[in-house]
Image 1: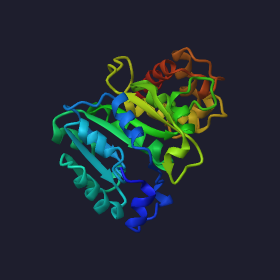
Image 2 (image 1 turned 90 degrees about the horizontal axis):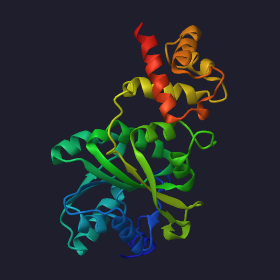
Image 3 (image 1 turned 45 degrees about the vertical axis):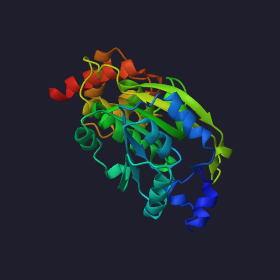
Image 4 (image 1 turned 180 degrees about the vertical axis):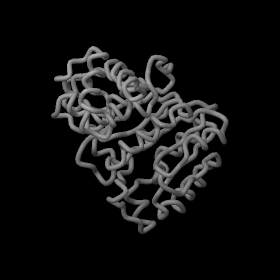
Length: 283
């Protein structure tokens, strides 16, 4: 693996801050991630942000196929050259933004659930996670690098100030576990904060007692969009078409005090509240 600084200088391609580009420098780090993630030869991997191929190459050496998405067109020729130098021929490069990729269509074309890997830019990490949650029936699991601050939000529990909308959405439908901590010096350019690799396992059985995603996620969004307000006020003054009376009834039927706030509710309580709100909306 050629050092990112050397490669980028040789190709006259400086990192772009707008893309949140921080490239892994130490070749043992991506190999460690692939090893801990137990990537096998029957896996089809969707990689978000292939960059210079630091993770792409060990993934391709372990998996059946890698579908690599890279938005920065300046890196495509560089990446293809690196893949050729390593004798890699099972990588399909998609030029574009992951937020524009139909993940379900990719999985259907490969006739398998995908294993998603990537080092996510901080500014769109939450958007990507929401997209992956929406397509979770076609995603077996994700192994993703996040800035430490966001990783803590994903694993946060009720009562923690880091606990929020994305914490509940993810913990509702997936098992979240740490894989590794990566110090800032392992990247070029060096970011201002360490990163964490998190595994998100979507293989847990769906909850049969839950309302549809649209209602549940709307309730979660409404509750946290005004997190300083009581749940009664947050639910009745947000995007949900609920009156104050309906919000009060939903909370009462869910067994939740209307004076509580969003960050105190567990995932299970949000599911119960989602059912109660759904019942009010159907009346």
